[in-house]
Length: 320
Image (tube, rainbow, N blue to C red):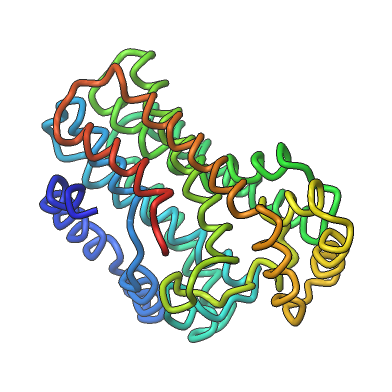
């Protein structure tokens, strides 16, 4: 990550300034909640991708800073809403906004961030940019509902799981990368290549997130281990066991998922670790990361393209 930061640090600092400016509201609680969640850390991969993709294609304007902030606002709004829906109390090693300020404030400030993001889109004066981001925001919402519908679903298969990821997580990665091509008025093939890069990268990233819920350390991943299980989320390691694991291990996982039992986490963890499920999930994530890297092959070779390539590798080679 050090190399990536060295390439993009100056632009990230400018984007941070945009975020601070655009967070301002006359309503004190809006400022408090928004600043709390935005300043709570995180990798900021999504806005980073917008900045890198634009500059990889030679963009020399300033709209990429504004659009990177838009991407971060949309992502932050989804986090605020996610934590309320999931009843989460810990994110990035800190209390969630809903734990600190309450559910109502979190939902409403999430709405503020969405609407502020759309105000900022208008300033860019591009109907195409608005179309891409409006579509992405709508698909993300559909993904949230799909995930909700699959809570406790022991019959879900890998294809359905990947569909949820493509909608809920990868869609914003896809939009973030596509914006660079739109800003530089690149041809359709380049725009599509960057879009597919973002989609594959986002998919790999989310699969590894799901792996870390059963293999990470709480102080590193910044959330409580077993959260996915406690919420009844059938992630890829669990799907693998239910489809390919031994009967007793599959039965343990199915019971824990159907009843969202965190107290069964140790038994489920043992089943996951003994079944090869984590290895399989990492293999799937690695394939997605390699597909992402392949999408960059026809882009100009420069430090920003190399940084995009490095992000695909870092998405799977991480502990948090």
